[in-house]
Image (cartoon, rainbow, N blue to C red; front, side, top):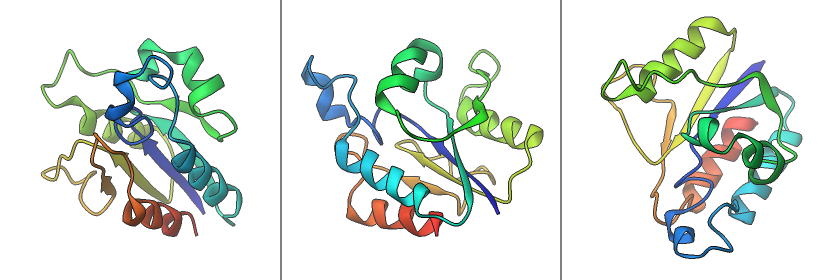
Amino acid sequence: MKKVIFLDIDGPIIPMRNMVSDEFRKKADPIVHSVLKESINDSEHDIKIVVISVWRRLYEKELRTDVLKDLPFHNDWRTKDLSSMFKYERPYEVEEWLSRNDVDSYLIVDDEYYGDFDSWKNHCINVDGWNGLNYNDLTELSDFCK
């Protein structure tokens, strides 16, 4: 089964509380990174990462070599930037990406929630952006990978 995890970076992977520290501003929460990596590696499914964050434009090098290192990126590893076309662009970006790629299942990990969009309903872990993924979020992420 082909699965995709759409990841936002600021909030879920790098909690906003990290932004007060120059040392941690661009570093993934090590627990989140570890659970994500272990869950994907232990899965019997083909799971890939697709980035939905503004990091896909602003910090491409850091994103792939530092923040999400050792994680399996999809060949089409980021959504298109549709911010000039839509006020709430992220759901449209996910839907556009899904229209071009064949996947059986997907999960969105984001600190923003767009529940009015079908692509978001029943597919999103809505994270507290200030503190990142909590125990229940990590459990849901791990369960998706099984």
